[in-house]
Image (tube, rainbow, N blue to C red):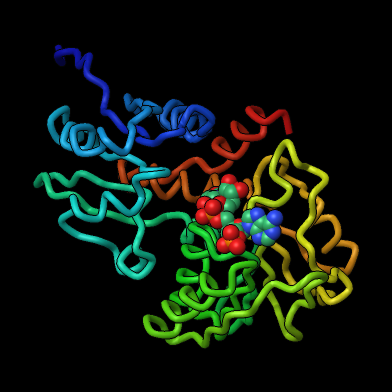
Length: 286
Ligand code: NDP
């Protein structure tokens, strides 16, 4: 008889604050659906304790770990290898402990974004992409779109210097053209924008009535509007873009897809994306 194995494979997330991070329920639903004896633990790790906590990843034989604020950049100093995208983005949200013990860093936020579009039959190749915001999410999306063949990425941000820095990163590391724009009141979306991405916190629960200060009449019919905000799934931004004839893609798909990429990196198994997205909807009562 085969000996019983009472030891689960461990994954999880380190962050501070992290209590409101819903990734665990999604990953554990996926592990269960695939019959894998894996656990995903949500762990509070302060900046001061990062090194001690991160050293434990190998010590307790974890398969890998997600990093969220404030650790996504700090972790770079502790890794053996980075994916090309993570290197350019300069931040890692997923670490994989390989069989030989080496630590690989990936950034799945932007890849999840691109995959969520592909799952809807939309590609970024040869497209003009405009992004509202220049924070962590915008950075991962801008770089990944550019690496996936977008012809141009325009960064529109309230703080122009951040948009300029990000546009510079895209222009010098990818074949895409990149431009930075100051976010003015009632901002006109650049003509020819084929994919418009809302990558700020605007509209996030509980501020569900907030919409970005853009001239929605300048959103082109037939273009694609994507929101990174996933709670609520159908944001005011998406509704207003739909009124202009745009096709909308919500942030839940991106969240499920990046979770699915992490799942596969850690288990080697194809992720049950339908289970993961359904679990998120259930969790947010959507
Ligand atoms: P950051 O704090 O790094 O960046 C926030 C960005 O939003 C900045 O560019 C900031 O501009 C801009 N911003 C915030 N408020 C306003 C406002 N009122 N008007 C104009 N601009 C504003 O946040 P993240 O990039 O990490 O996260 C952004 C959102 O993305 C969050 O809601 C997060 O939950 C979501 N997200 C979703 C994911 C998914 O899978 N769906 C994955 C990752 C993140 P400025 O630079 O001028 O301050």
